[in-house]
Each structure stands twice: as structure tokens, then as C-alpha cells.
Amino acid sequence: ESVASNNTYKYAVAVENGVNISWYTVSGAKGYTILRKNSDGSTGWSSVGKVQADVTSFVDTSADIKTGYIYSVRSEASKNKGSYNRTGIEYVILSAPEVTVERVQTNNQVSISWKKVSKATAYEIYQRPVDGEWQLLKTTSELSYKYYLNEFGDFEYKVRAVRNNSTYSEFSDVVSYNHIPYIVIQYMAYNDGIEIDAFDYGADSYNVYRKL
Image 1 (tube, one colour):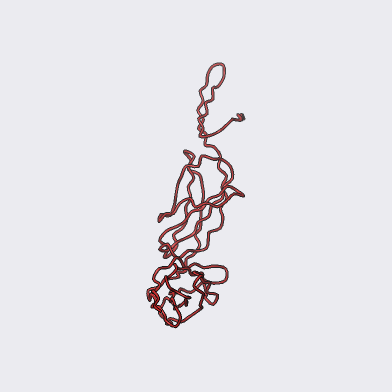
Image 2: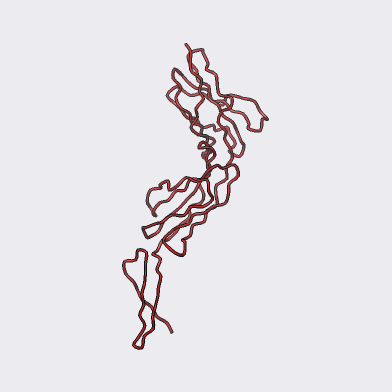
């Protein structure tokens, strides 16, 4: 019984107890053997685990998440073994980004920025209202992102680094941000008083204060 080789992987990402590797199903496979070697070439391929055919992910609990690895998966059927992709999928150590969130002072834009992470090819930005659900806001190769936020209130942001759509860092620390309407004030003095005009980007009402 022949079996196709496995050449397509989804991701290799650090998790709490090791490195999680995921791959696509191989037609005819009765099971999979997960292979690993150090990415610096200091070790050769060795088996770190086996799973049944209906399983397409594996957590390598023997891995040190601070060590770079290359993983490959060999598909098997009965006593026949499929070949495996010796290029494999690389698990690269990516640091979590350091994130800053602030408003753009001239309008209702929010600016999210972060420091460059070595070996990252892109960054995923997530946002949620406080106590709401996290949503992917943007994937970008830049080190900042600006966008118009037309809702007001408390929001949270986090960013993670990505390499080649397959290796992910841990998320950054969550950054809280309070978004309030931006208001431009103009005034004109007259003999009988002062006229104040407010041009806003979303305010429902105003409180006017004065001090000497």
C-alpha cells in the first residue's frame, strides 16, 4: 500500500508546554511520524512522536521553546512509509513585540506601533472593546498602523510577530486605550461676550468650563 509524502504544513508555534506543529491531511495515510532537528545543524532528524491518521497536529513537549528547530512529518500506511520533506517547517524564536497605542492628535485616528522583532516577516494586530471578543484588525509588514476608530470608549490592543505565515510569537502585553472624541475649538470676542464654536468628530454633547 503506497502513501503520498507530506509536504504542506500549517504552522509551528510556541505554546505553554512546548511547540505545536500542524499539517494538512495526506491522502492514504494511516498515521504520521513527527521528526525534528535543530535548525543550526547541530543534530540530525529524529522522531519526537507519532499520531493516528485523524490527527493533524502535535505538541512537542520535549522541545525547548528558546531553541530553533526544523520539523517534518512522515506519513505512513501499514508497513510502508512515505517520504518526508527535508526542508520541513522551521520553528523560529520570535520575541513578543513591545506595543504603544496613542491617538493621532488632529483627528479620530488611532496609532498602534511596535519595535521590530528579529526574523519576523509580518505582524498581526488584534483589538477588542473591553470585555469584548478579540478580532484581527490588520496584518502588516510595517512597524505601525493607523486607522479611524468611529466608536468611543475603552479598547484593548495586542500584537504578535509572524514569520512566513507559519511561526508565531507570543502576544505582546495587552495595551489599554480610551478613545474620546477629538474637538477643535474656535472663539471670537465681542463687546457683549465671547462666542465659542466647537467642531467635533463624534461628540454628543459638551460641557463648557472657564477659569480666570
